[in-house]
Structures are given as C-alpha cells and as structure tokens.
Amino acid sequence: MNPTTRTPQRTATATLLAACLGFLFSAADIVLLIFFQAEVAAALGVDLQKVRAAIGVGLLGSAAGGLFFSQLGDRVGRVRALGISVLLYSLSTGGMALVDGIGGLFALRFLAGVGTGGEWSLGFAMVAEAWPRAGRGARGGLVTAMFNLGTFLAIGLYQSGLTWRGAFAVMLAPALGVVWLRAHVPESQAFRDLQAARADGAIAGDPTLRAALTRPPLRAVLSAPLGRITLLTTVLFAFLNFAFYSFATLFMQFLQSPAEAGGLGLSKAEELPYQLALNVTALVGVMGAGALSDRLGRKRVFAGCAGLGLLGFGALATVVAGTSPGGGVPAGLFPAFAICCLAFGVNGVLGAWTPELYPTHLRTTGPGFAQNLGKGIGGMLGPVLAGKLLPTAGYAIVLGLPGLFFLIAALFALRLPRVDGRALEGVESTRYLDA
Image (tube, rainbow, N blue to C red; front, side, top):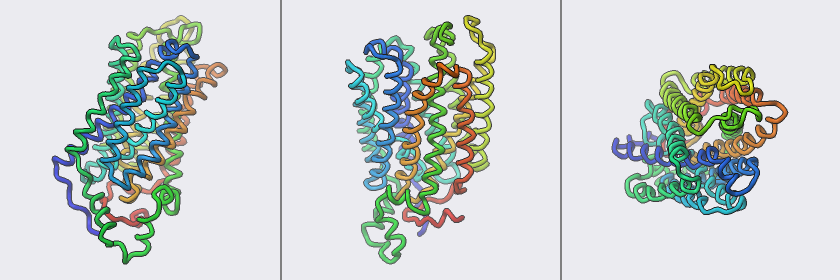
C-alpha cells in the first residue's frame, strides 16, 4: 500500500486542537476530586478513605471506557467516538455537583471515568495520523501537556473560592465543544483509506490481511503478534499510574495533614507553589520528552525519564524522612518534588510511541486497552494501597516507592519494538514490527 496523502495544515491544526482540548478537560475532571477530597468527605459525612476509593472507581471506569471507546474509534471513526466520550464525562462530572451521598458520587465518578477513558487513545491516534512523522513526538508531547494545563484549570477552580459543587458544575462546559468538533474536524485520511478498502473489497485478494481486518479489535490486540506488545504496554502503564496516583494523593495529604499526623499542615495558599510546580515541571517534561523522542528515539528518552524518576523519588523520600514534627517545610522538599514531577515527562513519549505500535485498524483499540486498563489498575490501587501502607510505613517510604515503579516500567518499555516515526498507512499488516 502507498502512504496516505499528507493532511492539509488547517485540518491537522484543527485535529491537534480537538485532541488538546479533549485531554485538557478530561485531566481537570480527574484532578478536581483529588484536590477537593477532604471537602467532599466532610460534606457527604463519610471517611476520607471512601472518597479516595471514589477516585479509584473513576479510574476503573476509565478502563471500561477505554475498552469501549477505543474499539468504537477503530470501527466508526476517531472523531465521532471522541464527541460521545466528551459528552459523557462532561455531563457526569457536572452532575456530581448535585450528589448527596457516597453512592451517587461513586456512580457518577464511574460514568465520568468511562468518558475520560476514550480520550487518550482517540486523541493520540488522531494526531498521529494527521501530522508528518518527523514532528509526531513533539505534537504527542503537546497533547500530553494538556493534562498539566487541565490540572492548572483544576487548581484555578480549587483556589477560586468556589465550593466543590460549583467547581464540578463548571465541568459541563466541554459538552458545548462537541458542536465545534463535529463541524471542523474530519476523520484522518488514513482512517478514510481504511474504510474505503473495507467497502470496495480491495483486501479480498489477501487472505491474511482480510482476516486481520475482520477479526474483532480486542481479540486482535490480544493475539499474536500484537498480544505481547499489548501485555508489555499494559503493565508499563499500570506501574506508571500506580506511581502517579499514589504520589499525587499522598503528597497532597502530606502537605495538608497537621504535624501531629505526620504532615506539614499547610493552608490552601501555602499548597499553591507545589500545585504550580506539579504542573510547570511536568509540562516542561512532557513537551521536552516528546520533542526529544523525535531526535533521540522513544526508548532512549523513556529510559532517561525513568532514571530521573528514580533519582527524584529517592531524594523526596530522604527529605521527608528528615522532616521533624512542627519543624516547618524542609529546605529540600520543593526541588525534590519538582524533579519527581519532571520525570512524569515520560508520558510525552508514550503519546507518540503507542499509536505507532499498532496498525491503522487497531490504532485506538491497542493503545486504549493498554493505557486505560493500566490506568484503571494502577490508579485504583495506588491511592488505596498507599493510604493503607501509610500508618505503618510512614510518608517517607510511601512517597519513595514510585521511584521503584519507574524502574520497573522502564524494563518493560525497553522490550517494546522500535518503531520511531514510521509512516502510517491506511491499510497495514504487522510487518513493520519486524523492521
């Protein structure tokens, strides 16, 4: 098959914008509950651990959403599936403003998670197919950076003086963007070429390719030769998400908890520098890592980020271990925290790498399954297990563990194929994996 024609600049830009906005608001959706966890628990009259469990339930919902929307994207189109996912998470998160019990919070958090689950694989597949391969890593890093800008939005809502109910009500806004999405963003040329080949019987003369294109998407990504890639990528994402969500949840608790509970007892205003650092450093990290992966290769940059994570979390554990109750904020806490956040730039590599691992007819199913199942496992277990480990192990050990998870994730990543910046065609076999 010949490579598809280059996407016009205006269409490529609109596609990039759609992916960016979708990921931005889905990130705000996820992070808001982390920031407001104590206020929500107090308002609903429940233990804080139950709200942490609701955070995990939302991430479990994202696993279900990833399975559903990623397959939908490979069947009916990435843009159409993206519009449905945005509507679902917007309406569900907005509805959380009205909940009066933990049951309602769990239900809406799960539905919102289903909606956000479609964002990652759909958005990155759209960008990968719309942009030339030479700049694919940089654009993938830019889309990944929207998670951090979405967190800035969540910080703004948290610091604005709005109640938690008012902040969640604001999240109805993304639903309006679906109208623009459907009007201005077409399906990629690669996907249209694939649909045309399916419709006109162009694959009838190649039994192997015909079998590949007609096999159920989920079965295909779990079967040889892609099954090994899917397993490796799923485990990789599980460890990275365990690292992030256990770290983010417990570090915020460390800042907020009083000295007698082992924390620093900071006010909302005193938390702000750390919230900003979480985003500024990670924003620099994902954009820089994505761009560097175009030049140095996905594997090398991934390994570099993992090494930085091991260093940063080791430093964070050392600083926290030396903190004395009532002694104020230790001098080395902020730089150690910033290095940890910078290491999460590894996600800027994955946004470009994972769509390249799969053929066009599986480009949302494969990454969607791996990323969302991994996020569901790591994100659900991370905050809960970290919270259970905290009373016996203490903040220093629990906040140092993500460095080990980075190392394990890197070992799995290094076993993935090297497919940096390959050409993406409409109809593809898996022969590119042998290159």
